[in-house]
Amino acid sequence: MENLFQPAEIASIVLPEEKIKSRVAALGRQITRDYAGKRLIMVGVLKGAVPFLADLIRCVALPLQYDFIAVASYGASTVSSGAVRMLKDLELSVEGFDVLLVEDIIDTGLTLRYLRENLYNRRPASLKIAALLNKPSRRGAEITADYCGFTVPDEFLVGYGLDYNQNFRNLPYVGALRREVWQER
Ligand code: IMP
Ligand code: MG
Image (cartoon, rainbow, N blue to C red; front, side, top):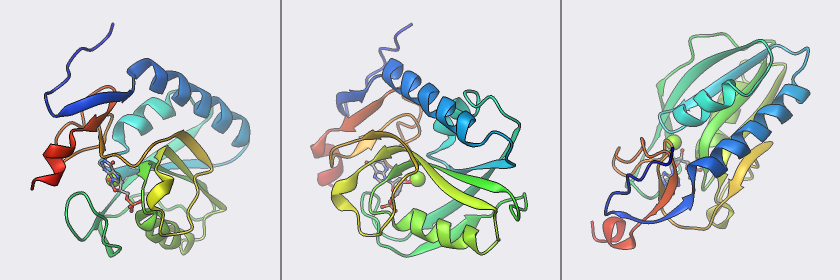
């Protein structure tokens, strides 16, 4: 059933719930093929990747483990500054495992560049990236997703895990935040 909750701050729905669902299922099938016989650990980047990870793991028909990591980038709420620090580390050891980093969106790429480097140092058997959204227009780091849901325009997006000041993560779709909301602050 369609969820009609659309707060006034949302200008438009960019990715409806059904479109996300079918794309996530396709990514799950692809991951199922690619990781057959491997030791898969999926690492969700808190908090934005939670809905994506939760849906994606249920579309992967393989034994797997998952864990979470949390980082913060310094700077204003809508702009990544480049400096990243660890807020919460993994509980699992990933040494010798095939690690799939799961992120909500790649914007400048700085968050994932930091995480990729950080996890590489723990000697995983392999390390790949799954991102629900790819915003290529602002890319400052040479990061590409091995599994990408959608390429999106350079708008401020919220919903399905993505937030603005910690709000809107619970929307079941991805919507564009009205410019007035994030520009006049
Ligand atoms: P990056 O380090 O610039 O690639 O930024 C990645 C992080 O910035 C994501 O995990 C999001 O938390 C946040 N981010 C980037 N673009 C958006 C957006 O359009 N809406 C909400 N969060 C965003
Ligand atoms: Mg995030």
